[in-house]
Length: 125
Image (cartoon, rainbow, N blue to C red):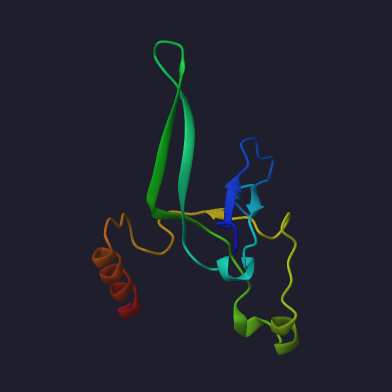
């Protein structure tokens, strides 16, 4: 039982921009195997609160299927076997998704078939 692990966006993140990239401030939830989240395209889903034209607020559920961010990691060939074996990271400073579009998929992807086609096209390059 892992309590549906996820990374929750912090509503008022104060993560500084580094090397021209926008990093997202997140909190971990659940008992995640966080090392498996590195170097994978990540989407977003959840609840947002919007202001209405009438001056009220409205809650909406969103699920953005296109990958929008990634948690970068040092390439495996740049680390020693000892470093790979002892891979440890700080959740506060190193588990920060970087906002990126289109996350290596060559544009908007709307279906699994299109994603597969885009990946095959990238491999041929």
